[in-house]
Image 1: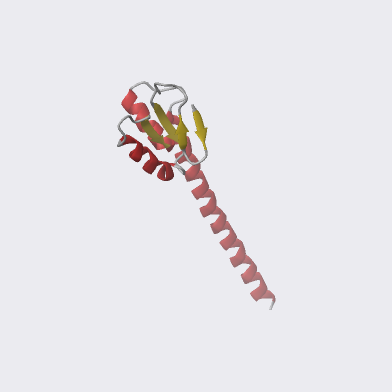
Image 2: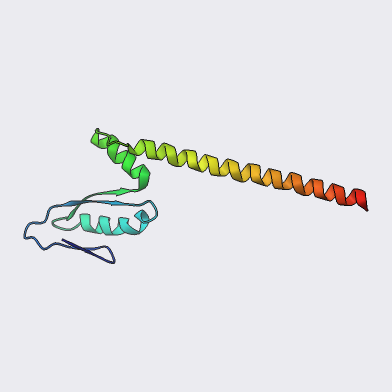
Length: 111
C-alpha cells in the first residue's frame, strides 16, 4: 500500500483490505468528498471515516470499547482549554481597560 499526496491510495496486494480513515478536524471537510465518492465504488477500499476528536468520541461510543485514554477525555481537555483561553482573554481585556482608565484619569488630574 502506498499513500501519496492528494489523498490517493494505491494498493500493491491482489486483494486489498478496507481501511479506516482517521483525520484531524481541520482536514475532515476536505477529505469527506473523497470518502463519499469511494463509497459509491463497486469495491470500496475505505471502511470508515473519523474526523477530529468529536468523530473519535462518536466512533468510540458506537464501538462500545473505549481506548485508554479515551476520546471523551481529550474532548473534555479541549473544552477546558477553550474555556481557559476565553477567560484569559476576557480578564486580560478588562485589566487593560481598567489600566487605561486609570492612566486617563491621572493625566486629566495633572493638567
